[in-house]
Image (cartoon, rainbow, N blue to C red; front, side, top):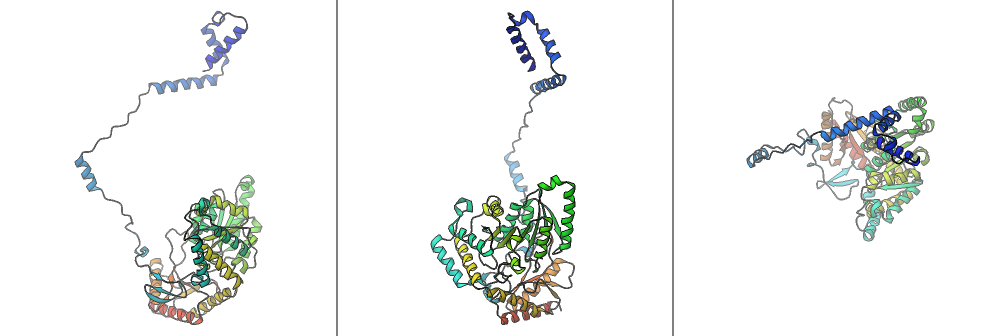
Length: 492
């Protein structure tokens, strides 16, 4: 390619000099000599290799695809007869995972429920405040159905945003005193979407080992590097943060491009205890590490006005960077909210998977949540009653045979674990299930905590008891007596 260009350049030069033709001045051999003298050696090598490669491509034989042998009708029938399909359910699938024997509830889930056509005293629901059957909430939902129908039928960004969704977001922002709130249509997806929208693959997440499955999924989706610290062990967390700080000093340029994030639950679903938020806020400020908390089981439970663990500890909403709340527990509706500063929340409207790709909350559920927040605002006494019932239930369960309680005394989630484990999880779960079955026979409903096999840190096998603010003292006494009796019979 260079030679013709050089030859043309020489032609122009001699023409401008008055020559009649290039042949009179420069022969082909001379042109070649000039070319090889002027062109760099590396350029010649590249050109030679390029010419060799082109010649190889031109001279090489094309590879014909092998012809497919056509099977005869008899061969096809034989192959079909021998084929065995893979089972849809693996052969080793646990029978305990079957849903055939799942209890069926008819009617409102309250202090008493009808299970399999049998009325029972209920200690197995997260309907802490009894809002699932509240009359004013039902009326608000029915009024919404008459105006909006029963569903939005589209994600928020695709004509799924209805004015009542914006009303609920505004209501939550005012209630919790945040700049902005985003509404998700699934409680599980709230924290599982908020984490990967905030933290990316270049960041590091410091996470408590006791967090629920939704947080674990959110961390995996973020693809961030994760360092787990022992459950509620702030010394362990600080040692990890200090180790990271020393690493950042060695490579300041890399440190500027990466972030650190602390992720905890305010009230741990799997243990019933609280995260030490004051100490976490102290570490947040000391190591410049943002904090994400999940208040799904503390909102509507803790604090003088039910605003959650931040209110319980006397902290400000600005002391954490992102606060996620499920609306499916104390509020008894559907979905969840993520709260924080506007620039953090707005990011989720573009990258929060549960927000972008899921149909929005049915308007009737949004209306129910708005009315529930209004009741919480004007009836703060219900929260104190709920916590008193939790304390009372724990007092009544003291001395239960073979079992120990975990969690805070005022949290309405009580876990009963075997004092003497057999060492085999399946045997422990079978033993606890026997206690649950005996309680059901005596007209009391409690549940066993169940976990998926891919939990990052499997919590101990336990019976989970939940208390409602509407339980009267007679309900608590009867429930505790039945549970203690069943434990004594099974663990004698």
